[in-house]
Length: 466
Length: 102
Image 1 (cartoon, rainbow over the protein chains, first blue to last red):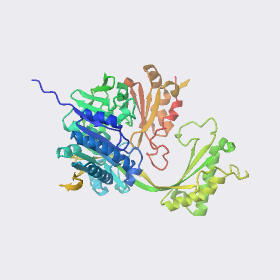
Image 2 (image 1 turned 45 degrees about the vertical axis):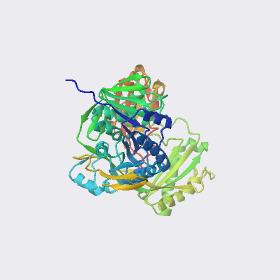
Image 3 (image 1 turned 180 degrees about the vertical axis):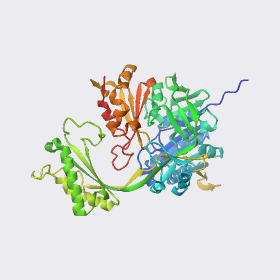
Image 4 (image 1 turned 120 degrees about the horizontal axis):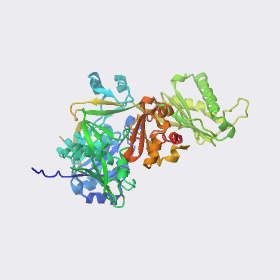
């Protein structure tokens, strides 16, 4: 008995992150190829713990709105789903609401009638404590076991969604899905997976396109089109003059991934070890042989919490006498500063953190790096004070200021003056956040920790939908 | 003796999530791949000593199809924490450029 061939599924991926832009000509070419979905990621932990901790977007509202308008206009032309993951950079509830407002605004301005589903995956520490008590939360290397106190130390916690909440929202009639934190790949794999396309190739295609044009030879010329089919998947750049090569596509599996062959996703692990990359034509690559293994369903947790406030002083030194004995100078400087902070301000060393980074010398050197052979020509000293509050951090920095300006290498040297680029010299950096979680939570139902809210925009009016 | 920067085509590093760094060594061709693969300075223990992490934590992957050696390890300072000076881990690869390659 011969079975009908499975219908292929095309996903237009305009860029690696919403707000970074896709050239209009490349996007229009993508739309002309009639994709079955438009999907893009809008966030990442890549820019550090501030965005999740503070619950704010890295991208500007105007850049996000420009991109969202382009996608919404293209979507309306084809009548296919538009999926956006990790709204507002960190995918907090506030990030989803921020994106929902922009979406409603664009719909009204463009006179579109759209049904929108919002997927929220921010978690309350109290709820996660129940999972912790039941032994359902486990650490990922290099983290240790989770404690309730660690959960409480987070200002925001998000769980990374898989593709299932998107599939449900689209099945329920959403034109546009705006989601909280989602794995970069799940948002791109959702429509192929819900249409029953092969699992390994769907995830591998999504991993290939998660950074938009980075899997092409000219990464700044817009995103890519994925075509997932029975035999695997094809990837081609949206821009007609750009190319994908077996090299550019296969090498992308390495990018930002600690394992070159495997990728763990909610409920599945992708294995690309035996994948074969073939040039279909000068600009399209076909990938076959990607496999998967079903795994217990887990969602990764990300948490960020404030640990203090920082103030920075930046100063420059080029005096060759000091360059020749820099480490000795830094060690004496540090000892003098901490002694003064203790005796004059009354803060013991455990009450604050003082770090002096010698940029131009070895600020970026790891602990086991060999010492430099020649003295640097000049160094920038970044002095960082972290304290429980901003006032204390700045108070300590102000105390350090005259020392950083005039500290001599030898006690009897004539008083030197170093190069301060700013007045005032102290720069308040605000709250310092740290990532707090590297754990997964095991769940029975992929929608268990996800809340869905629907709204529609009709003739410029936004209204809630049950 | 030559060092990695003379033999490899391209070396890069990047954060792989907030707690891991991954280094990709694109050797260029099979001959360079074989030479680089054998460099003692790129073994797990040597990389662990350089970056101040436990040698058991360092993972070295060989990807012969791409002539790539990939090295991943947990970072001592999680991304963005008080003492982290390279949030995206984009400059972590630099000290490896001086590893001798026979």
